[in-house]
Image (cartoon, rainbow, N blue to C red; front, side):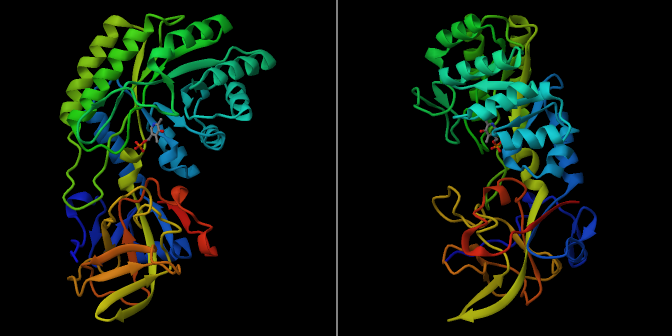
Length: 411
Ligand SMILES: *Cc1c(COP(=O)(O)O)cnc(C)c1O
């Protein structure tokens, strides 16, 4: 069995003071007392600020930056993000309520996602947000909601492009997807939007997620703009927004290199010029989730038991897959790999015997780290899972086995 490195130093942004990991400026042991119970998720405001600032610095200033609530819908996080980004993208009626409560202006909220219900569409039209329509049914339902409320709904057409964002280069060939409207059908849907008198706002293309390959992203963004410009010839009015998706990945596993923003910035500079000359009134936007919040969050679980079974050390904690499905390897991974782990109150200790970190669930799936080179941890110590600010709690089966839900804090 391979032994994972303890903490991939180049992947971690949290500072350390002696034995303690610092979260929001607080030693982890102190933060744990402040939270009141373990396990918990903690998100660091200063790291969120720093991430958005460094991204803004690297990318052209005319580019609009949206936050995808799906990555982390904690209300305090969403409220914090509204002060940092130019728009909030939601994917359900529930996320829409969080964005509105956070104080985001409705005209900077967009709602994308397949199968929006009549109630969600009514909620969106009433709120006055930008609705990304993804089918003929949605277009008709939005028009009905507008008639009933006496308002003119704003719609953006989500396009299902004939290409995908692939970590290993671009795959062409017109995939079948439940998301968006197939590009070849977009002209007829635009005519329908015009006939219904809806306020056409622009185009949205989202081609993929978690890419660490800058070249793939650059190529995908160029194709997206090209497709949007082509389809804008069929639009009832000049588009005011081109949202070309995101897909910026973060390094989770050993050996993964950080995404290189320089080529992406150059590509976007070219695309902004292209858009400016073809569609002067259109803004160019990208939407990011995990890239903005993923590295600013940790999951913390306390060691409840330390056992040695036939030579192998197990650290059994009070947290696990029911709170953090992704770190357990059960959210889309084909081969289980360890997220970066540490013992947050023994940061200055050398690694001891490799340990396997599990949760309290009676299933072999409940693993947070396999054969990890951690310091010799004892009962009461705090195991930290890094890269946990996105797709953590809200992407986990908290009801599984009936243990209590973890707390969440923004520090
Ligand atoms: C999930 C999603 C995102 C966010 O993806 P990340 O990998 O977290 O950046 C953005 N846009 C759409 C349409 C999505 O469905």
